[in-house]
Picture 1 (cartoon, rainbow, N blue to C red):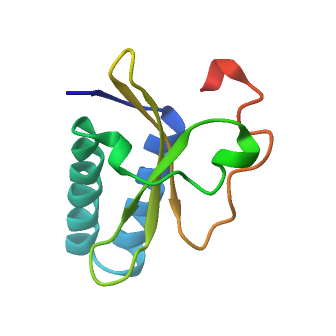
Picture 2: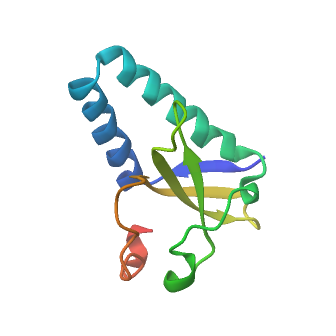
Picture 3: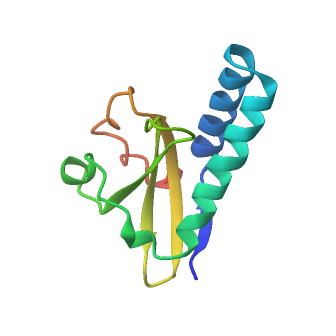
Length: 114
C-alpha cells in the first residue's frame, strides 16, 4: 500500500474548489464534492500506476500521472500526482479543473516546492 502526500498547493486547490461549490452550488454539494475528492485521492494508495500519464508528462520530463475525477456524468477535475514506487509514496501535486491549462513548463523548476 502506498502512502499519500498532498502538497500545500494541492490542498489550496481543494479548498478553493470547495469554496466555489459552496458559493455557487450549495453547502451540501460542497461537502459531497470535498468528501468524494478526498476518497479519490485515498484510492491512490492501491495501484496508483493504474492511472494514465498526464498530458504534461512528456514536456515536463517526469512520470506525471492523473486521476480523472467526477461527481456525476462528466469529468470535472484532474488529480495530478507523481508515484515513487521505490518508497511506495504518491505525491499529489495539484488538483485542476479540466478546463484549466496544462501545468506550465517551469512547474518543476523550484525543486524545494515539489
